[in-house]
Length: 339
Image 1 (tube, rainbow, N blue to C red):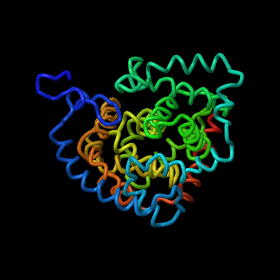
Image 2 (cartoon, helix red, strand yellow; image 1 turned 90 degrees about the vertical axis):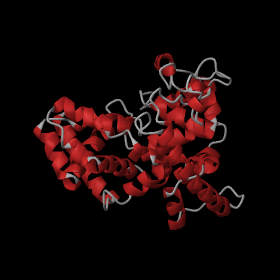
Image 3 (tube, one colour; image 1 turned 135 degrees about the horizontal axis):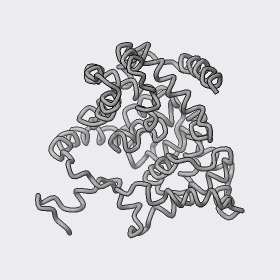
């Protein structure tokens, strides 16, 4: 096995999901975190095994919501995501549908757009390389092609490749990944990936309004320097924090996203901003602000996923779906009037 000069072997430089760790990866602080987190994972795994008791069904309840907020063990993640998102029910109601989409007539333009993005999807993940066996690019291509023909109004849009890629890494199953992608794009994220991306633009404005309410000093800074929210947070929304936050943290966010819906994205965004308020407020100009927003998604605070997830439910304070929907309505109207 290839070894580096510092004695770390290849397997150690690749995380459990196949992502290569960057050259400047802080192994010491990660190991310190992970040894603590392992205790949490073991405890949660025992509780989840009792909850599922060998059968593949769970009913939505306060207990299940609490369990999900504390993290779904990886061995149960695909199953729980499928059930709580409604993807499992949809898959069972439409047997063979996914394979029929792959066998049917294809739109050449759509195929070309998807092919173009294949090599750009996770170049730092060994499982997506052409040399990998199996190479997950094949599964990714199939899922995106099927989805593009299933939801013609959306077709294919950049960002969907990363989301589908993560789903494949967790489910290790094309058909399940397809139905989870459908749950996210069709129901959980309102109109993020349609050509006009109205839902995405709306939610970025909604975040801006929430910041004005909950972290007013940052809201004021953004306004003073004329920084549009889309410049600093669009990838948070489009990629659902993939390549922004550490993998384990992203998966913990997605656990809640599948159960509680899109307001989780606002909770995460507000927590990142609130926790780093003093740091952001040091910015004195436009590029400086953009740089601060890149910095706040790195470091111990975001790596310590268990503590981070506790914070997203306390730091932003109350955040009801009613508030979000009201803001969505006014922000959407404002965007439409601007044309």
